[in-house]
Amino acid sequence: MSSHSHLKPEPIRQRYFTPTVMVITIFALAGLAFLAARFLFGIGAVTNLDNQHPWGIWIGLDVALGVALAAGGFTTAALGHIMHKDDYHTIVRPALLTAALGYTFVGASVGVDLGRYYNLWHMFLPSMWNGNSVLFEVGACVMTYLTVLYIELIPIVTERFMGRVNLWGFLSKFNKPVDTLLRFLDRTLSKTMFIFIIAGVVLSCLHQSSLGTLMIIAGPKMHPLWQTPVLPLLFLISAISVGFPMVIFESLISSKSFKLKPEMDVLSKLGKMIAPMLGIYLAVKIIDVAIRGVWVYLTEVSVESIMFLIEVMVIIIALRMFLSRQVNNSPTWIFVASCFVIAGVSFNRLNNFLVAYNPPYAEHSYFPSVGEILVTLSFIAMEVLIYRAFVMIFPVISLPVKGITAKTKFALRGES
Image (cartoon, rainbow, N blue to C red; front, side, top):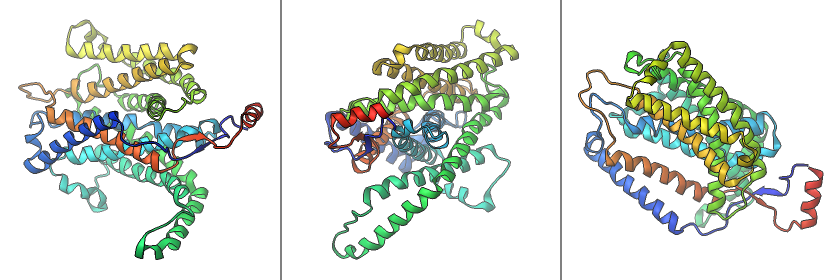
């Protein structure tokens, strides 16, 4: 029997607003003000984007990095459901929720960044598809995977409301039909969920790698340190590598916020899997630089060489930390190590989309405006606020089963 058999997903019964949540809410509202200005006065009124610099942090960070950091959804789903590692089921729901929110705001970021956002619906018309476009493949996969994520969250909703539907007033006549629908969805998805889990893993691998393909098309506009034919492979491996650290980061933040005991028995096992993946990523990256002979650019003192070295060194530090048993068994140090991985992948996406990309005929460099930075922070803040509300309403985070005795817990540990 699993050592987690005495844990059960339950809604968190705590006060929603705290001083920290209030500060986060202020950031969310500040960004929304700039979003309103963007749609009222145009994208140029809020950003430092122009014809020379058609994209900025809303694409380089909000989209490219957001997609990578949401990879914890498909990595934990694969671990818990496809590989049938039952010990990890307690972290699957929080990871899927984080991924769903991440991809939702990735889509929102694209809509905000597009000049003609009102034509976004063209993506849904097969007659307007371009099968040869890498960007179309990324958009189609992201939209489909987001749908899959929402489907994977349906069992959480059905579990919360089955047998508890209690609509008010004239809506009360729909109580029984709604409950019947919930039971039908729960019964159907329990038999077909494996299809969506597999689809989610496949779709994630496709668009994670295709983001790298998108930058290959830039050709000589990209600095040689990053312009490589194996860029799709590097994007995929880095996304997989940051999946588990992001789950650890989210789990420890949630535990701290809700005053829960960290699930170190699960997180330590995840930590042991991270080092091999980081090792593979670093090996591919370093071998690629050596084979192409672009290491000579590292002998120059430039923004590109410095940023490349920072990106690599941060990952090396994280790799060394995750090789330590003391780090994997310590909530503080495994959190710090996870932050290093997240920072390393963040530098990688920032470097690929902003530092390495040199627009032709550029007369000046790009730096994000206050509005761009606040909108990015606002999206992060809104993700946190929605996540907090969701786990307080729905059974996402696993809690100890009420009424279980110390003797029973001892017996459960003995059987595991």
